[in-house]
Every structure is written in structure tokens, then in C-alpha cells.
Image 1 (cartoon, rainbow, N blue to C red):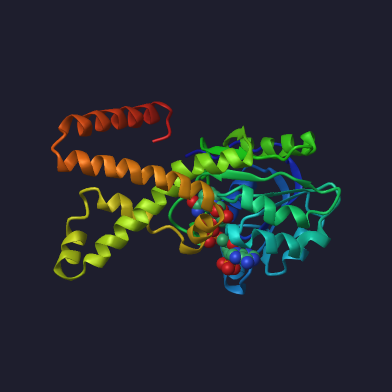
Image 2: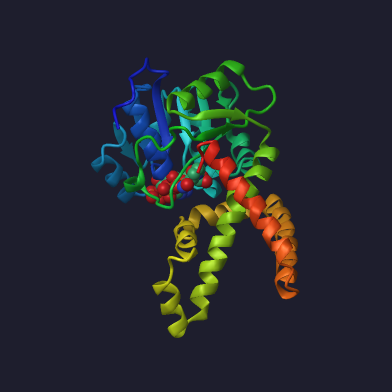
Length: 299
Ligand code: NAP
């Protein structure tokens, strides 16, 4: 793939707090596209910092979160959802007045509730969620063009500085994302059905297959091609990240889960009573959804 065109820097200094799959990919992409003059990062462990430095993801990666954000115009918290509040607290007193603080969390309401109390006056808080990723994690998982052609949802709060939100939007667009803005509660409901429930189902199926044990287990692995393999990919996603997602989007996930269970019982009944029409109708409808997705270049 040819290198993306370099543009004028949108920010002088970007600081990334957390440098795994998402933080590292932002660093790689922002550098390649010349979106900042300086990109620094900080993470919790010395091991991850050393790996990020070895991979040259940012100009420098250390373990002092507060030092990393000094003089930064844009700070993006790229830790698991459950760590966003503590990370924001740790950097709060070092934030430059007028800078933008954002995040990449897969849940918005809980992350906003955790981060907002620590944002000093004069700093612009603009939450965001790039809807792009893989099942890999850590700095080695960071890849170029991860956000190209993928959605990025901004959930700016009422009263936010519009210039700050526009600048963050311009940044994500420069990374290749298609940016939408929405209310945080709406974001959490949409993601509960499109992302969180599918992950829960994958974790369940793979766990159930593993519980079957014995020779059945080895046959499950041997004949994994029949659909099971796709679930194992999703179920290989980072345990910390996904634990935090479910604990922090509890209400929306439980709501779609209840609905899903009803629909599952409907199918269970249709199978038990040989109601092939019901099965055929649903499977035809879902096939159309897949075709519509392909049409939207999302599949
Ligand atoms: P990741 O690869 O596991 O990286 C997480 C990073 O956060 C690591 O650098 C880790 O540092 C650091 N970290 C963890 N706890 C921390 C703490 N308490 N203080 C400071 N740093 C800490 O995770 P990721 O996949 O990039 O996910 C990051 C965020 O992006 C999550 O909020 C997730 O919801 C969101 N997201 C993920 C995806 C996806 O597909 N993975 C997609 C969209 C959004 P150490 O290694 O040093 O502990």
C-alpha cells in the first residue's frame, strides 16, 4: 500500500497514555501522516515502554504519565476502560491550559463519568471511540492504517468548545476515519448490540466447547472450520479490555442480552416443533443484512 500523503501538523505535541493496539496504531499513523511535530507516550509498565521504544512507535515512551502530557496539545487516554479515570487523575495537574483530552474507550457513559471530574477548567474534554481493532493487544499489535475507512464516534458533551471538537474530528479524519457524533448513551446502546453482545456470544460458545472436554474437545478443535473458528478469533480478544467493557456498559448489555435470549428461545421452539418456515424467514433476513453490510464496504 502506498504511503498516505503527509499533511500539515494538526497538533504540535500529542501525548498517548497507554501504547497498546490502539495507542500504538494512533502513534504509527499520526507519525506517518505528519499530524504532529512530537508524539510521546507513557504506559504503566517498564516492559511495555521498552517494547514501544524498540518499535519506535512514538518519539519516546516512558512510565511517567504526568511528564508525558506536559506541553501536549492533544492527550489521548488509550488504556482499558476501567483505568481511564485513574490515568486522567494522574495527568490532571500537568495538562496545558487549552489542550484537548480525549480517549478511545469502547464504552462512553462510564468513561466520561470517570474522567470528567479530573479535567481541569480550561482543558477541553472530547470523548471518542474509534470503531476499529483486532483481537491482538500490546504495542506489537499496533498497525498502520487501522482506522482507514472505519468509523470513529465522538461524543462531545453539551457546552464543549466547538473548535476543540472540530480539531479532534479533523485529526480522526486525517487518520482515515469516518467521523460521527452522537450522545454517549446512544453510543453505548448501539455498541452493546454491534460489538459487546457478539463478543459475549463468542466467549460463551468457545467456553462451552471447552467445557465439553475429553475427546469431544479435540474433535471440536479438529473440525473448527465449520463456523467455530470465527468465534475463536473474537474470543481471543484481550480479557482485561473486555472485562472492563462488560462491567462498564452493564445496563445496555443486559438489555440487549435479555432481548437476545428471547429470540434464542424463539429459535429453540421453532427447531423443536419443526417450524422450518420461521427458521428460513429469519435466515433469509439475516442474509440480506450481510449483503447490505458488504454494500456499505464494512464486511
Ligand atoms: P492494549 O493493547 O491492551 O493496551 C493497553 C495499554 O494501556 C497498554 O499500554 C497498557 O500498559 C496500558 N494500561 C493498562 N492499564 C493501565 C493503567 N492503569 N495506567 C496506565 N496505562 C495502563 O489495549 P487496546 O486494545 O489498545 O485498548 C485500549 C482502549 O481502546 C480500551 O479502552 C478499549 O476499550 C479501546 N478500544 C479497543 C479496541 C480493540 O479492538 N482492541 C477497539 C476500539 C477501542 P501496560 O502494558 O504497561 O500495562
